Image (tube, rainbow, N blue to C red):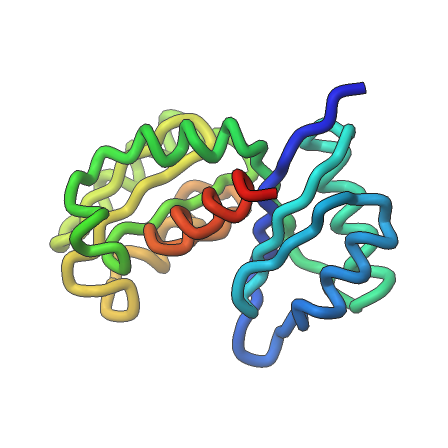
Length: 178
């Protein structure tokens, strides 16, 4: 069976919730994944598996829940999907302002009504674009100062996690190097 590279994103890592990368790498290896690599201490991993995306998410989530006590949403994208996410970025300034452009991996594609409701809330300097299970957000004043960003998940009503453009490119390189 063909094997694929996957980028794994753990939701809600930071502050009091940590996923130590050395332990995470061991846990994922023991769960049967190959070529496991981690990227910074904020819930990112890259691995190889013959499982499909849903199987990878289920296996990773179960392993980290049992071995590390982590019980939050886990997202996975194949390396090819990740490349398409990067290619689909509508914000040309990403390369010059990599911490002001964020890409959200969504657990499911949001409904049209939810996207319309989010558009109605986008009244500040931020701009966003939804493409399937991906949301792109440009925060020219910075993510930490954004009053719009905290409204995204409750409005779309799907689990999600975001990475800035710098992390997106770093994870792409990590996936391709493995």
